Length: 288
Image (cartoon, rainbow, N blue to C red; front, side, top):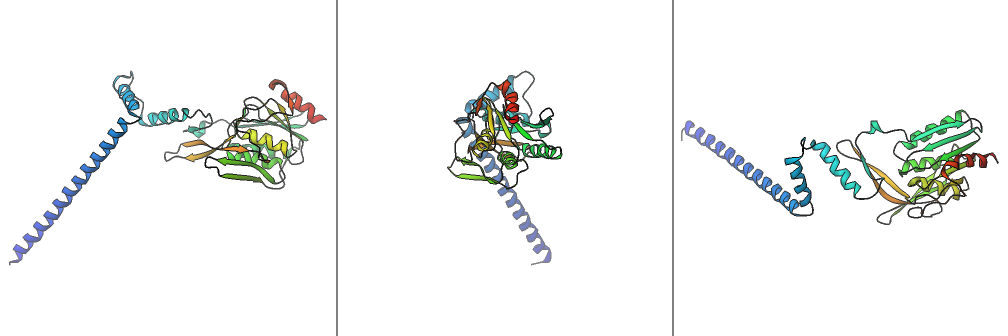
């Protein structure tokens, strides 16, 4: 066999192998396409068939056209989360737009530190700690913790607040859906362990705020003033999604340091007054 004939055979074999690879790749791609198509058709025939039917009409007829894929995705997630009927489970796509959760000031006429918490979220612990440091720099003789309308139950925020008022020991418990129970504790030497405390409550106080109030009373650290709370004593965890957004999901029910439930139970005040009168009443109690 001549060298030229041998080269021709090698080239032909190489072309044959390349053609085989292309054909196999095409077959695999076609198979995957058909698999995905069948999966989509199966989904359309299942519980989501009405969803795709409705969305098809939106794409065809909605005046102004459908939203962007990202907006549509977030809208679908928010709609699904709304079906849980849980105000604390939500998705946050722009953390820069979030408002502060803690407001602090000194009531100069009584030299009392006042801290109001809008919600117990992922930033609350750091904001609360800053308020505590502010009161330490300009010493106050007592503290009013305003939890009227406070929602949310971010676990580390709940622990941080109790850590400032308690000198070690059990803070609260979280009970998860599988029955697993987790105990949260406080470090000794909290910055405000020596200060008298009054906690303001209202009918819409919920989440971790109920565990905070219940534990502070059980540990002999606070007088509760206001109205019986909502009984929404649940905890949330934050999950970072692949696009940078964050899903806040209710994951547990909360118990106080003495193992008393607050979810579906609530917390009753020591001194029952109308919400508008709670601050003045608390100031009177701290003067005694």
